[in-house]
Length: 423
Image (cartoon, rainbow, N blue to C red; front, side):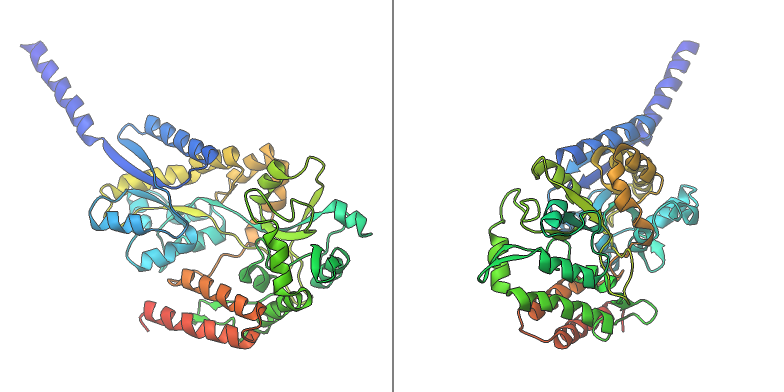
């Protein structure tokens, strides 16, 4: 009888342990084999070290801002517990009510949230925050720099070890590095909007400001430095002609084709991920250098901006507390492994030395992280991006003046921002 009682007790305990184990469903869209493998290995380790939780990984293809599948699943009560979301859209999704506030669950887990924030780069925490609270934990990141072709520099009589520092030098070098045959461009020194030469890239390099969080007002249309950054870009459009530039670019559109890698574009602003493309697709004798983005006298030295991904808990998650525990692991220990495995820059500070140890070239990018800008953290961030891009195109093609294009964009986005803020 005693043995039977003991057996029944053991069975009860075993049953209780099984009942307490919860399954976390994790959706992500990292289909790249290297990225996917690293994530899966971290999930496996988490499962092995957290016997009360089992994480099930589901690959859900989609773009950075595509959350239709998520919203449909959440509405049907079949959404995941953890989701991989572009950090740039966290504030907007939080405002839309799509996300749970992860900070509340981290507190339940006994986490010192303020101490945790200090372990990530400031810009990443800003992007993960809405209304003063964390709605995500940051994942990887990126920065923008100037890449230049050293061989083309030598051919043009320029010192290959002295890249342009100022906008004036950039313009001077671009002129010397450009080759024309009539109206046809055979080689380009530089075009501001190629690669990652976005509105934010040059607006910040010129020392401008897009948004004032204190007044909750967009300010780019009145900022003389932002205005000047667009007027400077327009000079290139007028000088070479948008039709000619388009014809030049179209010759290098296609799989693995890029005018910089082909040795036909001497300088380009691009991200740290471009390093892998150079190593994979450029000729073996390709010589290149990396430098900070040039800036005018009144601009910002070492200017750059960062994007990247985050991990969030969708609204209606079945196991939000356990989801937060998994996210905490992935954003810290898992992120260090991911940085080493994939060469993605980490937002978790402890991952930087490990990445540089593996690839010393990453130091060029990592040094810029402490002062990197992030896109304005507002509930209409995607709309702001689209309207700034639209304004830039109006300007380059001569359809609107710089002042008018920026004014129209600012008014349209501010109207939607005020609605979102309840004004």
